[in-house]
Image (cartoon, rainbow, N blue to C red; front, side):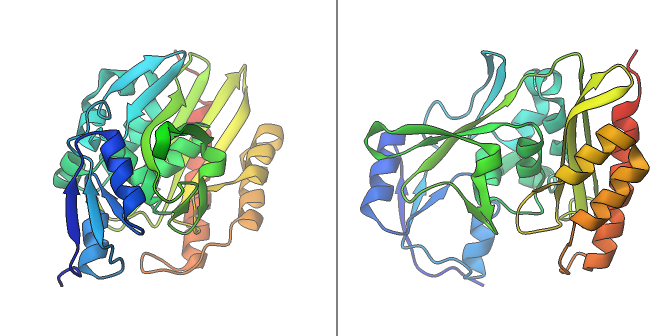
Length: 282
């Protein structure tokens, strides 16, 4: 299929991109395009204008500032995967990146694009939520704001991004020695969307896990934080957490798997990751 006709504007700067978005209602931002182009070709989206931000400087950096790892919106998945900063300071994201599509997709797809598109079966939105990260957003007139990951994903492919705004970076807390991270997903084939996945973060306090964040993806309209399972795992262990999760999740059927199968697989991943988080580090 071919997309509906649209105009194209290559932004020279962030302000230029914001001006173009403000001047054209319903315009869309083009970064990596790995999700957007597919939706255009299937005519699930038909914007009148695409604003290409690939030429905008300053959005492709990775750095550690004030105890947080900042990843620019235009950082390609492959670049993040190759980054020693991400490997050392954001290990959960480093664990998730190889599961994103295939090399060709990782070479073009962007971190910011994945977060802004907010596919509920995608890896990075779940990681951002598990890490209690935040999103930096730019708007017209020089307006800048930061939104916590807990408040960013609002519905199916819906986020806190307003009309005419652009996601410019994400930030997550830099790794600490007492922190534990776990990531796993189950897919029919390597590179497919996950039937179910889990991104997890916890603070080790002796033999116990504190500040748990268990975020499942592929099981709802957004990444889902399993708060009841978190509390049960911290207080009573894996069996209690599994029972709490079974009552907490209600995955819908989709082309990847039925809801009943997804719930079972979520429990499998919970047990697997809980054991990993609990393992003592040498």
